[in-house]
Length: 429
Ligand code: UDX
Image (cartoon, rainbow, N blue to C red):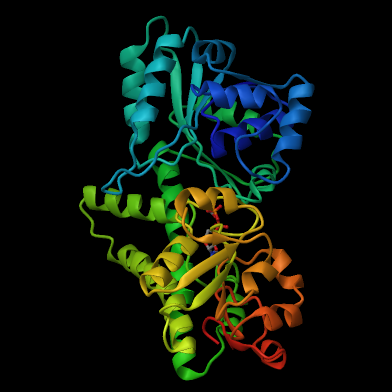
């Protein structure tokens, strides 16, 4: 089937490529000429394991192409996906102007029946506006359906998440659109939830805020564990075995970040407020998360007595492993707070260093964890990259000025670290 994917950001590029991978003809459109040039030359503008190979494979097979020409993309396709950005405005509300712009362009370009699908994360009721705008700007044809098909991709495992999802959510307003979308997703073996557009839009926000809720819950619980001598890992394991709860997303740590959770949470609180409901539970989820990042700083301070002029080495900067994404990364909040206390920060990340330099130009960046360890008073692990599990800890300890290790992701065992001579603190243990 013929698919036009408008927006080659994270969601658009992964989704477009994966649609090609399952056999569809895909044209990806972006108004950023540089991006399209990079893609045409076989490069990819983001870091996502396996994506470059998959793009190359599908371009070669003639199923995937790139253009800046929206009209051409719309003309050739039955499905037109809107996957442009909805960045937060200063007040936390998503900026939907790109969606509006794309809707006007689709309206103007349409010549026959299209299924126009929202892929971007948008507030409930956006579908109604998309319909209105497309209709107002349509020149040649008014034959179209609007649908909502939210994505649940996680950075670092986005391809697998697309090809093997827990579910596919399809919000539709007609039987015709439902049938077309079910056909499009036929190669994907997963439960398909067909519903109205508003419910589909809500499923996305509800899922993300529920997951944030789980993380803040376990992080709050980690404080109780610390105060009562319990071990958060065991508590999470014990809770997680209850099928109604589940073990996933119960890892206590230095807080959640990334471009989705913090942004979507804020947006959802705003959406609820607009609809007349004060979603206090989610406000607290946000507060707990903010505090959790600062608790890592406090822990470090408590182990060093004073932070002023202390050298602190940070392991991991990206908001989570297997990505170079620094957006809303907990490392930013933690480093800022450490520096505010007068500490001197050096840091290492396997892939996010270049991006981190753009956000934090004036800290020292190191080329290995061993460089980070050199002469520091403490190491703070913020992102649990796999390579940190294999470190030579004798070498690390010997390089440090004081052997203080704050494990912001509970990667290591307290007893083993103590045996190795570290003064160790995890989260909730
Ligand atoms: C998330 C959703 O999982 C995905 O469905 C949605 O489409 C986009 O947002 P992503 O932001 O890529 O994906 O990352 P995810 O793996 O969900 O992690 C988000 C943050 O939560 C990370 O900072 C991570 O470190 C943190 N986290 C996750 C925890 O602190 N504890 C956990 O148990 C799980």
